[in-house]
Amino acid sequence: MESNHLLISVLCSLFLAPLAQMYIDRFSRMALLENQLEVFLNDQRISLAYCYRIVDRFRSYIESPCSACGRSHSIFHYSSFYTFFNSCQRRPKANLFIVEILFAAVLYLFLQRYDFSFIFCIYSFLILFFLIITIVDFRYYIIPDELNYLGVFLGLVMHSLFQLEFFPVSTGSFYAGTESFGLLFSIQGILFSSGILLCIAYLTSLYLDRDSMGLGDIKLIAFIGAFLGYKATLMALALSSILGSFFGLFVLLKSKFIERNQGYTLIAYGPYIILATLIIMYFGEDYLFSMYESVTMQYVQEYLTLN
Image 1: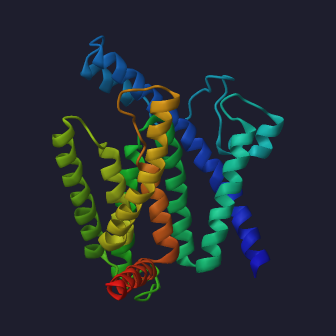
Image 2: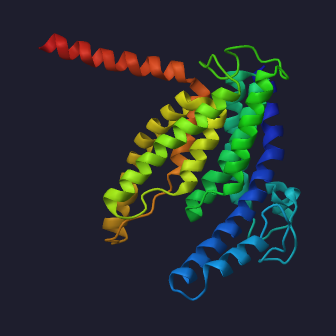
Image 3: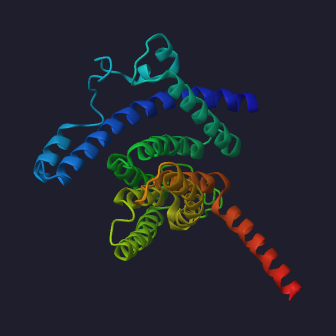
């Protein structure tokens, strides 16, 4: 069984990883263009209307010539095997190979957890979206709106089909620890989770007198809420705060003492939300909540015993 799971993970990775790499490249070029236009806009060298005209000409789903080799790359060109014989500066074979291995490892873990089921297929495409968002956000601090909006739409459609019983999904079998699904479940996940994060971002921005969080992170939470519901999404949001604090502290110390940067430092928050969501998806919200409850109760009992 484990050998079958490994084979399925590798085969899925050989197709999905190049697909992810292709859109990572296209969304990265889009993000770089937006960052450059933002610099010109802040310097008042171009107008906002001109920015929109330039951005509207670029579409991530349309092939464009590579800036390094001048050729248009299809999905198969982003496999490490193809790149090994046809190298390109925009497609470093080491990076492609690492992503393929990492993607296969994550798929293997979820395959061990859920077997080759309907839920595994859905999670595979979620992991595909998450991989693209993570790398683009780490590089350019931008989360593509196309992926967020598409994720919200697919989440609503999927739960609507569940409610209409188009798919043979019984209660409690979709998400580990989740006993409900349907259109209302998805809408609640979008409104409650993204609404709470929007309020936090607004109040924090008022206190700091500058933008504390991008709208891309809020849209990402709406995307996750459309699939997982508000309970799992809020738990992922709380866990991402802990993960982001650990990594963010390291980034701040590096920025201040190594790079000697005395201003504020940009931190990509989207990858920590995604990492926390993957943990929730794998273990299930009920398991993590019961584990948290047992740990806290143990500390409470020890405190009461000592006093």
